[in-house]
Structure formats: C-alpha cells, structure tokens
Figure 1 (cartoon, helix red, strand yellow):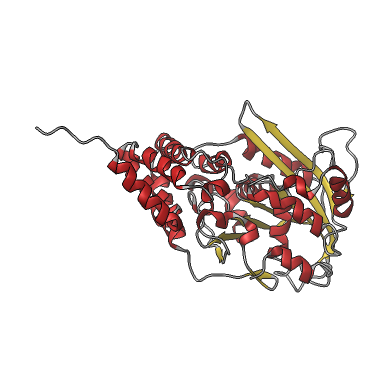
Figure 2 (cartoon, rainbow, N blue to C red):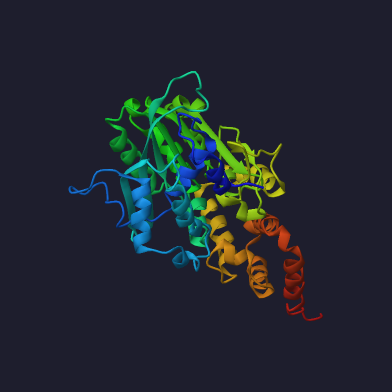
Amino acid sequence: MTNFMDYLDWRGDLTFEEAPFNEVDALLLSYLSYVNFDKVLPDWKRADAAPAISLRKAREAFFTMHKLEDFRKDRSFIRQAPSLLEKIGKTRRFGDIALSCYVDHVDLHEEEQFAALCMDLGKGRHRETPEEGAKEMRFVSFRGTDDTIIGWKEDFNLSYLTVPAEQEAVDYLNAVLKNTKERVLIGGHSKGAHLSVYAAAKADPDVRKKIGYVYNFDGPGFDREFLSSRGIAEIHDRIRRYVPEDSVIGMLLDHNIEPVIVKSSEKGLMQHDPFSWQLSGPAFLSCPGLGKMGQLMDKTFSTWIAQVEPAQRKVFIDDLFSVLEASGARTLTELYSGNPKSYLAMVKRLDKLDESTGKTLKLLVESMFEQMTEQLAPARKESRSRRPRKAEA
C-alpha cells in the first residue's frame, strides 16, 4: 500500500509542467497547513511582513528551531506534519513553492482557531484541464482540526453553530486573491475543507471567478439553506470532494457533491488521518462504496441531525462527547489504544443518557468502536452486572 509520502519518492522530482497538478498534490498542500510556521513565516497582517519565502527555505528555518524527535510525543495524527515538511521541502516538485500570507489566529475567549497560508506554485498544468498550456498557479490552504477530542467536537459543532472562523476565511480569501492573476486552487482537510468551500461560495464575485477548483478532504457539510445559495451554485462544478470508507466528519450534515471514496489503511475513526489514504499512481485508490460506519453516518446520523432543531443537535453532540471524554483520553489516537477500563467508563456514561438521544448515540458509538467489540462487550456486561437490583415486592 502506498500513501502520499511514497508519492513524494515517485513524483517529487517532476515539476507541475512535466506532471500536471492532481488531487494528491492538493491533499499534500492541504495537510501542509497543519505545520506551525510561527517564527518561520511572518503573520501576513504585520506591516513589516517579509516577502514570500520558498518551501525549501521554510523547511531549513523550521528545522533550525525544531527536531523531528520533538514531535514524537504528540499522539495526534497532525504530528506527521513536520515529517511531511522535512521531506516535501527537499523535492524538485515542491521545494521552490513560495509561501506567503500566513495567519495563525487563536482566540480562547471566542473559542476560535483559524490558520491558513498561500502557496505560489509557479507555472504548471492541471490534470483536469490538459488542453490548456502552463499557467501560474496559486494554492490557498486552510488548516483543519487535529484529532484531539475537543478538536473533533469543533467539527461537530459546525452542525448547529456559525463559527467566527467561517467569516474570517471569507475575509482572508477576498484579501489574498483581490489582485492575483494566477489560476487559484483552494483546499483543506477536516474543518479546513469546510472553510474552503464556505469561503469560496461566500467570496466576492470577482474573487469567485478566479477559482479553478476547491478540494474538500473529509470536511463537514452544511445546512440546506447554504447549499441552495447562489454562491455554492456558481462553484458547484469546481468542488472536488473526497472521504475515506468509514468517514464520520465528512458525512456530517448535507452535501450536494458526490464524493470519491478513498481506501484507507486504518479502521474506523482513524481513517480521518490523511496519512492512511491509499494511492494508485497520481490519484487515490477508490472504493465502490462507503463502509459500515460511513453508511451509518450518511443514512442515519446525518439525516437525523439535519432534521432536528439546533438546540437538539447541541444536546446530542454534548452527550456524544461526554461519552468519549469519559474514557479519559485526550485524542482519538489515545482512545483507540486505550484499555478496557476506558471503555467501561464510556459504557457507564452511555447507560446514563436520556432515552431521547441515547438510542441513536449508542448505535453511533458502538459502530465507531466496532473493532473494539471484544473489549467493549465485556465492559458493557460488567457495567450491567454492577447495577443494583430492584428490591422484590
């Protein structure tokens, strides 16, 4: 099985003129925005902000301050972002990309996190428009959430909240593309994918005209009002959507774009990690349909949550994450490598939930952790055996 690190070995020495830009390139650049470029790239709003620097030089600067070993204690899937930077920055294909317009804004009071950067790719061709000659290309990458349980809750919260990062993404896109003449590509993973589509649809009309393609990698959906808007109609044919077999985040709410379903080397929730997505040459290895969890999310949970009022969505999501947090894990990676005591704590929390949400929640949680059945089932049995028996009449 090959992933996008293998792709760099195979494709890294070819320019975008020699081998056209493709969906795997888009995922790589979307994932690259997970790198914390603080002190490497200046904040784009600073008056003294330095001009764009190459990815090669950014890599060198980053690793004068950090070592790969520094990130091995990080148990979230974005710990791989520095490894990607270390490898991609040395390639001929990506090394001369110019990075600019970096922003990493965190507001704890408003519970807002927004990060993005622009990448000027130079002259190249695009796989989907082979009849065109080489053109200057720019990629705008929006950062998503990591695999902390709190981060995943932020993705779920998009189903009932309008978050500040959405408007910030629109303002950012309008600002950085106002004077550009390049072909513009936009992408992101997870929440970053959601922001990519939202910003492209809400951008000024003159900016929307410059957008070639929008790459949505396993991003949460939208409400039906947004999907019927004029802006989304104008970019509909330019959106490319990708989800793994057992997608959870990418099946939230509604979508009006059929996805490419990608084969993953992981199971369950961990398929959200792009490092697990499998390739076939310069494209993803696709599957004929969704897996069991993906189908559950698509046909049961997402349909239900789209039909209920925002207040009910909030209750459901709070209940779901109270179950996951009961495990004591901080990240999904930790949760999946946990022990029976963690699952027992989750089962006890499930059994305390209100019946109005409990049935759907139990179905969802048990599907999420199907591969843990051997550990979860005994935990449930133990939980039930400890309940006090009702006194005989």
